[in-house]
Length: 290
Image (cartoon, rainbow, N blue to C red; front, side):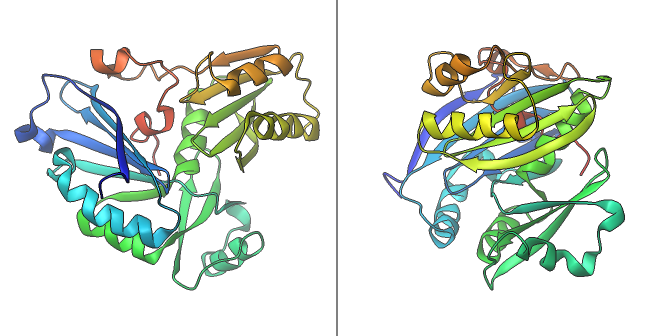
């Protein structure tokens, strides 16, 4: 495992007590690129710990399954007994289907319209109540088996399900006007477009350079007839003003800003020291009802 896992962030409130983990909730988000988790203290209504890992040299899900098997038991905060565990799996393989059109027996067919599925893929379904839609997605069986072995009672969802539901929740009082939310990840980014409190668009795009990033972002704006001179674009994820992604976005988009955390919770000093738009989906994973 040396050289394959890099700890990029570790911050825990001194008040956290591993012996009191049954009063905490654990949120996890992971992909081929990395693994992150945060801890919510129920009694204090406060997010009090976070840890972020980057995976290197993991090119397929077999490698990820093997790494998870080695990695989780060696990470002390992941071996505790929590009140609940919520897990978001990052993958571009997902399809949104309105609830009135959804049939559980056809879940596999919905995905096959857009993706080539593997024989061992498990087809999962997240019901998005605020959207009145179902997010159909897949997860390799070996990954699912590894995760459920360590967290048998965990609720496992697609990362876009929590992202969309939380953005709808945070914008439930918005009456009109389009807003473009861009959730920046290591090699992918999500675009969520809301018109008032309604979902107008969702998709994920792979990028290697800033030119890829701005191409897809402007392409989506053009397809939706949104003017980059007046449309609000909100950035989420690990992106700073000094990053190339921000610089190229600022060059083409006039109204660009960073997202904010929910006011429904409190945040430990170790969380408050980080930019508010960092780890947005991970921190708000517990808030949505999936």
